[in-house]
Image 1 (cartoon, rainbow, N blue to C red):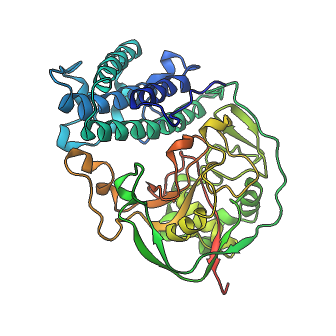
Image 2: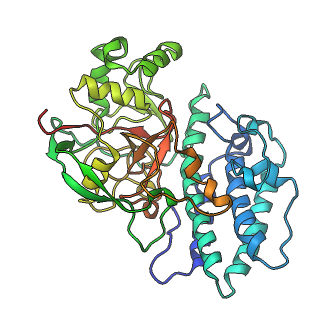
Length: 415
């Protein structure tokens, strides 16, 4: 499966722009127009909407303020494809994006082509710091939506009784048997947390600050399907002592008995490559924070804080089963700090001491979501390789399951 390479040393911003934009379209090459319109639940956006939204982002935040004489492609598109930037204008309701049969997919590709032409003309001129910064945010934003595009269409296809494959020619991994779960001593004392100055980072990774880490231990790998299946078979979903109150209410209300995409036999799961046998050695994924927390209690452990996780992750190279690996599904083996699954932490998504959001409309990107959500770390099997780093923070509501979400265990040093 050919995936365009991203920026390498010596490439220009225009070349990076073309590579990111080309990758987005390569990810959906097997889809049909009918696939791109479906919205299977409010958290899922149609593929067609993703293609238009990331394009609108460049139009609104790069071309309109920085391209002399630029005229909007359509006066309707700002309303249709704005996501949550209220200071940029009103928007179509998120839960009703699946009703947008028009503009057509062909018209959206025309939109993308028009914005690409305008962007490349702009990037061919002497670049100001503002253009470089806004374009770089746009490229990182599009990489986030590449991941969302895949997780969203996975949910859409999972609702189809025929269980079609999003990408039929995905690589499959050979299962590698894992041993008993082991821990290493984590760093303790005052440790620096957050992004260092230099390369691009999102504002929620800043400012770099000191955090006190108490003596603890952290798991050497992710929790596997086999270990999670043992939790299920041991009655984990029926024992209220293991669950947070909101989690217990939720699993009973929704009749959750297993991770999202597992079949009732607990022997198979739906993937971007269609249904496949459950690999007991691969990391469990598509579990909510509540499920991750309950499993940790059952295992006599807990979830790591995001600061414990970051301190441990910095001991490892930023490499793993990420998008370019071509599996698009968790695989067995390795420390797995980067790739495979986003790892739930026990830390609420909150601002760092001294946090300041970006000025203007882009200040809505991260800061306003710092309430009622949990921090996840490490990226997943559909995160772009050059998009993740040890300081990267993402966030989801604790009931979320449609993303590649899994867990690593931790515990206090004396436990």
